[in-house]
Length: 384
Image (cartoon, rainbow, N blue to C red; front, side):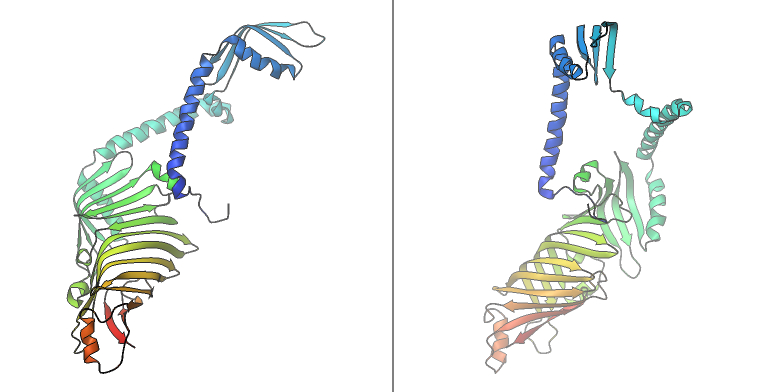
């Protein structure tokens, strides 16, 4: 495996992997049940040829498999060429997990067993205590951590959830210079099933019908990869007053993306659909004051700090639009710069046709050019 890459089961094989593991466990149980009921002759007919290849001949009055992994022979007779036979009352060969402690120095084996038992007891005790902690105790721990990252948290209720998670209800998040964000529920958890996609750390956010689902690699404090799924969010859900004052806005139907970090560089790819995208048209004297693109869909990828849009499609004023674009410094929304070029396939329909009537020139095509920042985009029509 190449250095710096994390192991991962391909998404299309995860369901098959779970089924395969279940099948293996079933087969292991079935094999154990069959082995424990095998007659002595079947066992001896298997052991005999193996021992003969090593110069020994075996006979026994009784042979049984023993749980979990062993064989017991009674009334055993072993014969070696040129020597009289050896009679033994019993021979037992087994694999015992307790033998794993043998690597521990002999004087520490008892202590090691006691230490493991104590750790298991403490883990159970900590789980029991955590599940009964009051909300104030949990919030007093989370609050300082988030404040160090520039966020202030309050919640009506906070609980640990089994086996490893925290659920916050009635959450309010505040960021310096922005109005607070109200959320119905936030759940942070560690799920062992996520190991199949190498993303066991999970963060879920819900606000009304809108939701966000983020999954991270095991080192969630500094994740190297992850997946994000957004649905139902709109510009009104964000603490940015510029959307309400500028006339810009959006409504997400669904956006899904995968990302990873290598040597401090972020790379991602994904796709999304919107109910609508709206940008103001500040051109003086224009009868079209805003452009609202319905049913927008796009694919995107992030390289370095730029978001590239190789495919964009939607509907504007009843006409299909398509195009490409780029958003630089996408990880810093207020400092970002975007450029989208959208071709309107039938520009003579809708309000855009009014602009053609105002232009005393032989223009036949028009594009909608969207520029500005992520928080304050604006559009303009270009005729040619």
